[in-house]
Length: 415
Image (cartoon, rainbow, N blue to C red; front, top):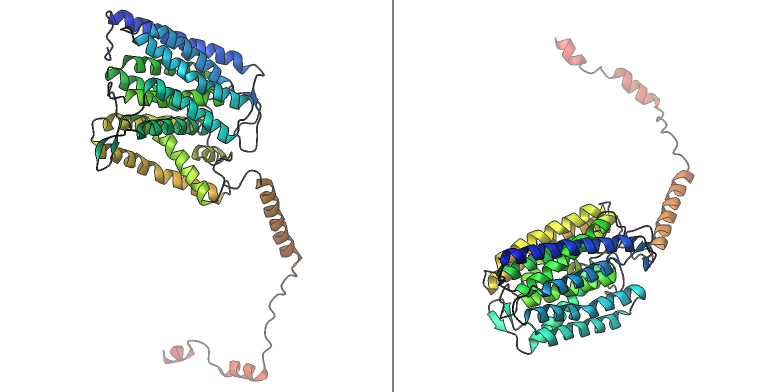
């Protein structure tokens, strides 16, 4: 059964199914209760896509349901180290959740938030280790050495922020996180990594319970506490699944699965750099935000990204059996497939002037309205043009006309 070494696989499967169902039910119950509270409301702003104050405590429901599921699933782990591994991973994720809750409660400065995230990622590396090897184009599978911990911390921090950036439409982060957690659970399970698979399965169950309250109605938001903790768990699971002793997947598995999100973030940041904008400044220029502002419903946008992540997961499973060059070829192929649509959407948004800074958009609209009024005023105040008068004919012209034979006269005489 997916590589699990339980003595009674049927009983283990029944217990896992019961825990998954209880986790989803618990997350749904907490989310519904928090959705009607006034705790940590997210007020609409110039860059937001909602119009009424909404609780942003959905991450509380997901995280506590996931913690309870991890505690329950640790009892099913075989061997003396199984329960300890699950409990240790759950404890490592707590700092990431607290960072997000603090950012929800009182917005943290960007530099301090990055420092806290790096500290949480460093704790994970100290307890579970870092990436030891990685595929490099034209070089094969290369040992990372001292660069491994640096790369691991960078990956976890970068993905935490990328997942947080993409949490701006009802159901988008939840659906893509659900797809990614299921992909990691399947990959780790078939690779024989029981603890990683159960942790990912617990996360998928918690997200599944949260989604009915968030998608498509948007009665409650994930919040930074949810997006940062879920992002941390997914990024860390990607590292655990690629450990040399497990070798369940390639280190590029998780980046390929979430490449639709990462590509959106990378293209947006690159565009802001080219326009000399502050990349640390809050904005609403991601492709999914532009789609919503162009008129697409939240549910359609979230479903689109869910489908993209699901297709990317299929590519990630295929890349697991490829060489280093083949794995990077899959990354390039997915990126090239996403690029035309992203560029077209940004071009259309630029034509409709949706990339104007939110803080100067009112002044921009006033200036454009003023110019239009001037154009209308100048066109209405201009004197009407006099009708063209026929030119007077001189006497000689009249004589010439009298003497001129009618058209076709010569032909008629000849006939």
